[in-house]
Length: 110
Image (cartoon, rainbow, N blue to C red; front, side):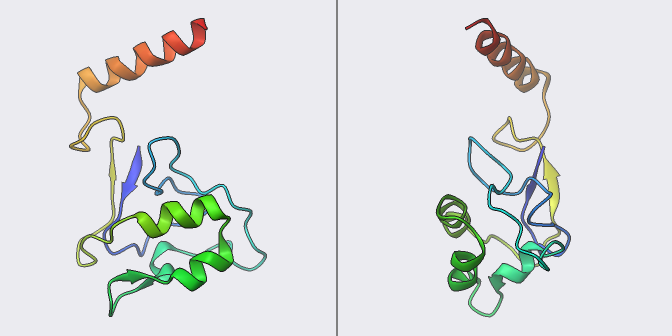
């Protein structure tokens, strides 16, 4: 599971899976002291509907900064929702679970 960003008010940037990258969904940067409860909404300029690139660059390592600023900010009026990361629709299907299971089994045999 991972979060699909909406109004970003409920997503903790350090403890929740929200990064939109096929290889990772959590940030890998170290948590700066005092910023443990920071949410994704604090990284967005809602007037321009853009990421606050200067803040993102200061808080996160280069890889996380790149992943974050490449993510589209879709509709800040919608709520954040958890989606199934293994399907393009975000909905759980038995087929998508089967594909994850097969990929895992193949990786474990190597």
